[in-house]
Amino acid sequence: RQVAQYAQENIQLYTRLGNTYECRKNAKICTLFADRQITSFAYTEIWERLADYTFSTWLTLLLCLFAVSASFSAEKEIKMDLLLCTMPGGRKQTVIAKCLSSAAFAILMAVWFSLWDMLGFAWNYQTTAGLSMPVYALGGYANTPLQCSVGVYFLLCAVLRALGVLFFSLLCCGCSALFSNALYPFFAGCGLAFASCAVSVASDFLHDPCWRAFNPASLLFPKSLFASTEYLNCLGEPIPAPMFVVAFALLATVLLVVLLCRKGKLWTSFAANPKNY
Image (tube, rainbow, N blue to C red; front, side, top):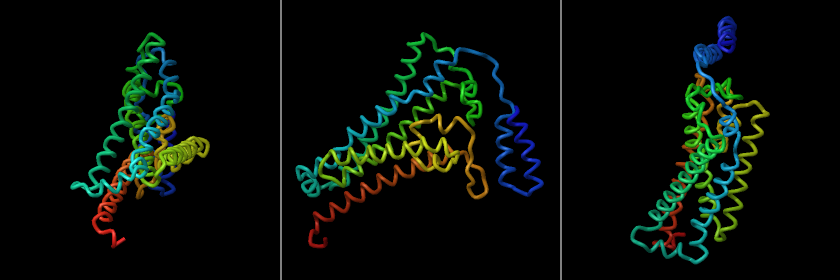
């Protein structure tokens, strides 16, 4: 309620200054925090520790990168890529199949580890109490923009992690299409993923939502997205920063698939008319 009160005071201030954007942003904050209350209490340490637990995220990322790193490089190593171009369906269908299989594997692994994390913590503490509490009842989430329960929040985290792992898996597939040795795309994918994660971690100290909003690695660590309420100016309208992350990751993922399919089309054209290249 103090946050809502401060937001109301800011609305009055920015109204006098004529700052329309800040008025809209603080109006949303005021609406978001005005009616918050905790009607029941439970033991929340288990879920606070789960929110800070990142080992399975790193493990999932490494397993997925290792699994998809040889998706296309293995073809080049045994010269199968040239043979596939002579198939009736061409190389494009092969690219689509490999992208779908890589995506299915990445999503399955991310969701699997996320669910086992919840079950493991619940079994270790011998309780599931607190899952129905609002997520802002957890320590470190007092300023979160979410209004859902703790259980729904962790399901949301599983979906976001799956999207983040999917992006980096397809990015590693793209690296695999550039090399004939499977080790090179694995190291390239790991380097890009870890660099993005380092930027995401550093953004917590920079206090600039733009560093997180356009970095798919932020999806791997949802607490950095939802621990505080941040907005970005989009044509004068305040848009929550997590929405930018999801939109950017989806757009980048689709772009990666299109580029891989385009590369497959070029290979098919090359096999049909090598003199043109």
